[in-house]
Image 1 (cartoon, helix red, strand yellow):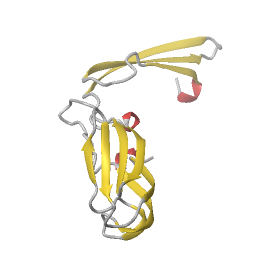
Image 2 (cartoon, helix red, strand yellow):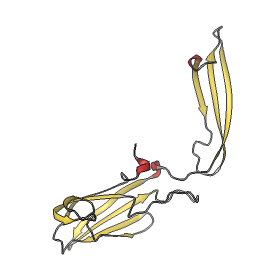
Image 3 (cartoon, helix red, strand yellow):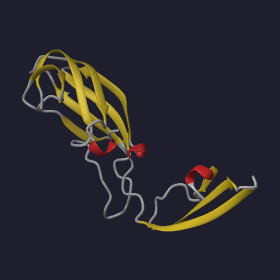
Image 4 (cartoon, one colour):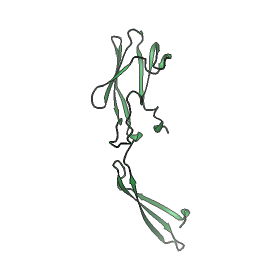
Length: 165
C-alpha cells in the first residue's frame, strides 16, 4: 500500500488530552481500494509513554475586569488563568510580573520600567501587583507625583516565546 492509494484515514485517540503521565494508545484505521476496487481496511495501534501535561498556551487566559484612576492612583483589576497548569516537576509555572505583557496609554509623558520617557508603552517604574483572590490580581500605580492619568490599559501573553505562532 502506498500513501496515494489511501482513500481515507481515521485516527482514534480515545483519551484526546494527555494531561496525566502514563501510557496512551493511538488507533489508526486506513481504508483503501485494492486493484479489484474492493475496500480494504487496515487497522494499527501505537502505544506511547507520555510525561503528562507540562504547559499549553491554549490554557492561558487574561481579562481586565476593571481599571480606573482615582485620587491620583491608577488601579487595574484583572483575572488570569493558566499560570500553573501541572503538578509535574517539569511544569512551566508563569510569573505574573515577568511573563505577562502590560502596556498603557497615558495623557502625559511618564518614565516606564525600561527607563524610557513615554506616553504609550510599558508600565511605569514604581507599579505594584498584589493577589486579590483566586486567579485575580490588582495592579496599582500612584501617579500623583508623576502628574499623569492612564487612558488605556492592556495585558496579554504576547511575550511568551513558546506561544508565538
